[in-house]
Amino acid sequence: MLSGTLLFPHLSAYAQPHDMAHHHAMPAQVYQSQGTVKKMTPQAITIAHQAIPALHWPPMTMQFTVTPEHPLAQVKVGDNVRFSFSQSEQGYTLIAITPLP
Image 1 (cartoon, rainbow, N blue to C red):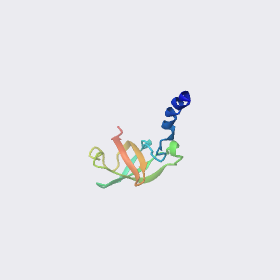
Image 2 (image 1 turned 120 degrees about the vertical axis):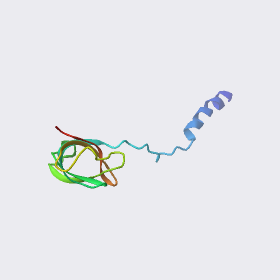
Image 3 (image 1 turned 90 degrees about the vertical axis):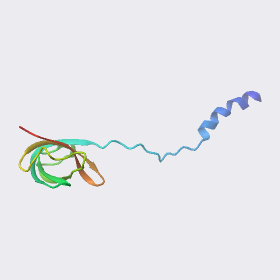
Image 4 (image 1 turned 135 degrees about the horizontal axis):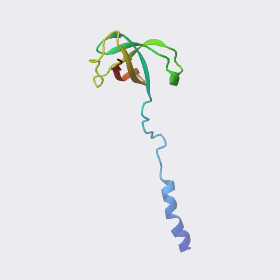
């Protein structure tokens, strides 16, 4: 009888409730492309970019949100650029941008 009692305490760990809804935030996927800057405001940049195969996107012109962490001081309208962005609930956000020579 004693041996049976000793076996059951380790099973109590399995009886503890676990929050299966607890999710760890996945890092946002970052995509890269090249394009030409068409318009700039302090909050957004519009880029005519090349196709982005990872998203099955053809070449197009679209707007990306700009955050204070990624200022646009080094680029101007008409510049050819290499850039990276991520997608969130708020849309597409610029992560990095550099002018091409």
